[in-house]
Image (tube, rainbow, N blue to C red):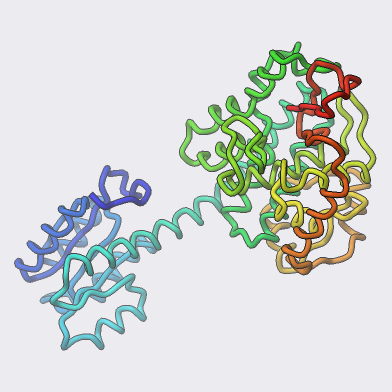
Amino acid sequence: MTWDLRPPHSGHARPRVLCVDDEPVILQILRRLLEVQGFEPVTCGDPVEAIALFDEQSFDVVITDIHMPGMDGLTLMKALRERQPELPVMVVTGHGTVDTAMQALREGASGMLVKPFTGQELLGEVRRALAASQMRYEALQYRYMSPVLDSIALTLSTAIEARNLETGEHCRQLGVLSERMAAVLGGDERQRMTIRIGGYLHDIGKIGIADAILLKPGRLTDEEMAEMRRHSEIGAAILEVHEAMADIAQIVRHHHERWDGMGYPDRLVGDAIPLGGRIIAVADAFSAMTSDRIYRRALPIERAWEELRAHTGTQFDPEIVAVFEQVVDEQGRIRALDASLEQHLTADVNAPMSQSDDWRSGQATAPALHPASVPVQARVDALAEVRAAAQGGDERAVIDSGEGREMLPPAEDSGSGKTQVA
């Protein structure tokens, strides 16, 4: 079977195709070809009967001849579209009626087959029609789900942060920062929403970490660090039980992977790390470094930038750090993006970023910066020079990447020059 799209809207195991034609031979050919390819065909020789059948059952796509007695294919298409506006309808025509078929395309037909057609041509048209329908369906689904997911995600993240004695702003900041980075990279509405929700929920797995570890004010032992690191896997397991959250679950699982493959839990390297995970890793580190935690005060903004740039190309994706520079200025304020992007972001983010004066004034006064107005490769090259100049001794992890918990032995033992953090 060659069917590889997501489960069909009809709720059946296989995509259901209603075939309407007054020629029994054509219906037999359609049935045989579709069955071989894993579809569930239902055939009908009368357009009026086809409408009654459509009212009783559910279908994912309709294939109809144009010239039939009693009702032509265009009239049938309009009748079915009144019942299901987004229904993919393909028209079948002979060589002598191509003009009529073109009219059908202008009136909204999803595709056209010219008799005689091959099995490959049939499969290609059906798959294209279903793929387009699936994309429209998911876009509408995400648009309607977005406010609900935002509310649920923010409620969960606030509960986790309250347990972790944080300010309640960290996850909200991550969601907004990460979505803006995805917008600069050209992500569509669904990608931006997925990454935003991933930012809100990146630490949801902390619900499974013991308070003795989560709230410990000092350094963590090896065993405690190993337990703390389980939060990314726990979070992914919580989310992946629902198919709609599968992409978000992958972001949550991999937001502590490192560009050089030394992260966790799967030690992924480079582009193998999901884009959302790479984005949130950078935003998470910067937000955590510049926020008060139970085990230390916030670092100065300039120190946070030094740490971020020093570990570009090892802990962080250089391109993502370059994009982060286009979203946040040197004082830690959110830059204004191009007006067209800001309009979409304002509409899509269903909860404001923060009520603090610093964030509000920062967004209002920062200079407008068009997406990718600074060539990303140029910034990547510059960051490589910064990292080379900043590195002294062995490579160590950034001082704070979400948990920021140093392991024993104490940092005063500087013989190795390494400090491991969660």
